[in-house]
Length: 255
Image 1 (cartoon, one colour):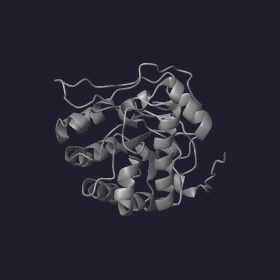
Image 2: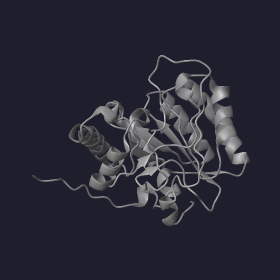
Image 3: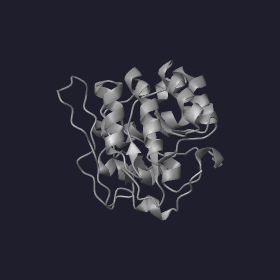
């Protein structure tokens, strides 16, 4: 287990090159992109972390998927690696046994909203409802709430990110590496993009709802390991305790 000091969390995004890869052709799907209002000193928004150790955080969005996620979990278990899964609330409710397995096998679960909307167009109340619903279902199934949030499509304004951190203590976790696997370029391309653009302290975006992404993982995981990089969860890369080791108590708001 790698434990990093708390001060490294405050350095998130500072002086670290943010990498996005441009696809070769236009896609009919909504674009996933980093917000255009990132600032260096925004501690509520994290794209990467300056770390003293050669660690990276592998993250998977949009699950659980009934077949791809279990296959990915098998790969991670075989290698003794931990990852972070940003789960959609309504899919957690649909596949609770997979969400439970993710937690039980030492991976972290983050909040990825209830229904995967463009939250930058939502009111504060509507956005918090999407996020709270997801927190509640994850807590009901795993016994612990998520401690970080990732917005669908990266669509969350700086004001919203600051507001969420203030009212729910949930930092927004973005990424420093995007292989654009959501364009489905094929497993070999996904793996090569991740291997080419990942550096120490990086947060890697990927999606375990796509077969090609999961197919890319053996080459990806083994390749990064061969470079001396170690996989940690988002909590660990922030210098926080392992998610499963923390004691949580849900506080219901009144009024």
